[in-house]
Amino acid sequence: MSACAFRIESVELFERNVRLRLPFRFGVATLTSCPQAFVRARIAFADGRSMTGAAAELMVPKWFDKSPGKTAADNVDDLRDALAAAAGAYVASTATQTAFGHFATHYAALVATGVRAGRNALTSCFGPAVVDRAVLDALCRHAGVSFYAALAGNLPGMDCRVTPDLADEEIANFLAQLTPRTHIAARHTVGLVDPITADDVEARVPDGLPQTLEEVIAAYGNRHFKVKVGGDPAADHARVARIVAVLDRLPHPYVATLDGNEQYGDVESVVALWQALAADPALGRFMASVSMIEQPLPRDIALARSIAPLAVLKPALIDESDETLDAFPRAKALGYTGVSSKGCKGLYKSLLNGARAAQWNRGVAAPTYFLSAEDLTTQAGLAVQQDLMLANLLGVGHVERNGHHYSDGFAGQGASAAEAHGFLAAHPGLYTETDGVVRLAIRDGMIDLRSLDRPGFAAGAEPLWASLSPLQRATAAASIEH
Image (cartoon, rainbow, N blue to C red):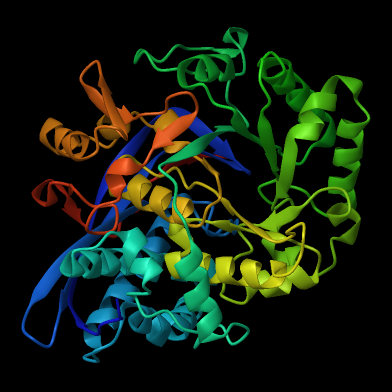
């Protein structure tokens, strides 16, 4: 397989609102609804043939940009503008390039355009992140190969032009050795306002789905968990203890991660939290299960000083600080050993960071550098399918999945029965239908990915495009509380 060149003929942008069944608290904000973006791209080849591809991603406010001067609606509008900027740049260029070539050509310019418009780099990268997935879907469909096969043969034409610390050969070799599995473990998120036991439930949601941590474990069989902490050491300690009381009932081993969501003001405070938790004998099993600490420091200081005092206690990774392609090497110099993979940040960024970790771990008996797969409340359909396939290709083993918990499958998106059943028919192992609603299926803590290995990038079904609204500017598209 060799990379092929094409031009991007059109990029269409759509959206529809998603309403959450449960409020999702992360950092300082609590999300109750927001729009999901959809992209449909058409690519054209020199021989006159063309092909379309698709992608989708939730436009979550107060994650890409937590500036207090911007409202949730401002954040969503910035994400819309980032999408429009990427679509416009890709289509305006008449150059015939590889899929990766289109990304590499526009990457720096789109970040610079965003800065001039008042958007940070993480927000600006959202645009090409979604457009690139739709373009790659079209390319895979044109070639008649799956995402896995396309990357193994470097069909996108990935090279080192935007990552001079890597060589072309290192990138190609990394892609060629990736071996996806048929299943991946789902890591359940315990949000900051999520009920832990039945006593915490103030109002029961009448959809038959689990609400408490106890119910989640009983329903899905999870063995991997992400525990969010909020920046108050005493409150965090007390809440972790309540969560652990539930997790320690599991008869089998479990794995946990701690997510700081930028809520701790300095390294010393994070170290103090860890030491307090470690000193609590009731938390011994939990502390032994924690594999990493995710982005505890605000992004404006996270890459400004060493985290050595924390790094000697537990591996730490960046998430929100992973704004630009040079972020992981910069974080490495400060003591971070991991970086998150999220489809909303860019599939090429994840793959290039994977190649870096492989390069840094080469010749070491115990690998130090790693990628972790995190969620942005990815929704049933294209968004969750593409994110799952990327995480699985990277070989991370378990992936944070929370979209199915906070939103009720295709029903939460207001998708029609025809659309939901189209995805169910294409991916009968990935989805399940209960009470007339098609939802992500998690059985014994695992997600079945076998149906995704087909021509296209996690394709097989598409949204009903006529049911979507054109991407728009709005002032109240997201509902969020502080």
